[in-house]
Length: 226
Ligand SMILES: CC(C)(COP(=O)(O)OP(=O)(O)OC[C@H]1O[C@@H](n2cnc3c(N)ncnc32)[C@H](O)[C@@H]1OP(=O)(O)O)[C@@H](O)C(=O)NCCC(=O)NCCS
Image 1 (cartoon, rainbow, N blue to C red):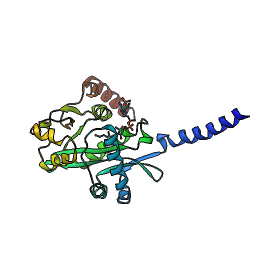
Image 2 (image 1 turned 180 degrees about the vertical axis):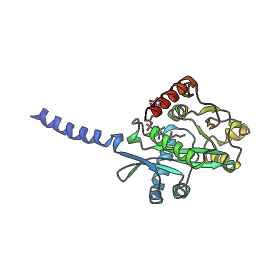
Image 3 (image 1 turned 30 degrees about the vertical axis):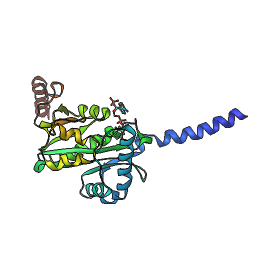
Image 4 (image 1 turned 90 degrees about the vertical axis):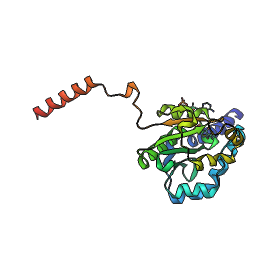
């Protein structure tokens, strides 16, 4: 009897747990002005995660995050009304570069592939709004490096990134800022990663001329038959 009630409690708890943790229930979309109400929570999540990881992080204010949301430069992940993830983009060097920044996933929603979904949406937003810009991010996070690599970003030295002072001043709130200054902004603890839309596609993604020829032949044949 006791076993039954334990298993019932477990089933209820576990049932809710899996229900809550299903990524299909989470919406990842471009942020709208009404999402600015989540700005304080976003800042808190970013700050608490940085403390926990013991890494440096550029500090952002709720006003800064709200401005990113209001200007259509961010992506939110929502589980119902609850904000569970966020990221934003910002253009630098007069639009030649776009940084993807501020990626955060609520600790209760990690390891579901949510960062991947947010990164993909942020990438889409950046390419849509700044189709000719080079995209970059600076990070100490292994998951972020993995995700960036999958999207075609390459690790680069800081000399390949924007030289816009305002961008680097954003690092002032990071505990490693002195290291950055000490190295004349050439390197720090973060790894710079760059996606260059002009770079040639990896061999696997390059269209094979023979396949194109065969496809064209088939298309022509089908066309003639009609
Ligand atoms: C980093 C972070 C966004 C990852 O979010 P997530 O939703 O758990 O990540 P995903 O489930 O999409 O996983 C993405 C990849 O990273 C890997 N990964 C996730 N967490 C990891 C960890 N702690 N260590 C190593 N790899 C990890 C996953 O295995 C996956 O790789 P795969 O596609 O090869 O399997 C989240 O942990 C977070 O918010 N951390 C604090 C904030 C932060 O570090 N932001 C980045 C600042 S630049």
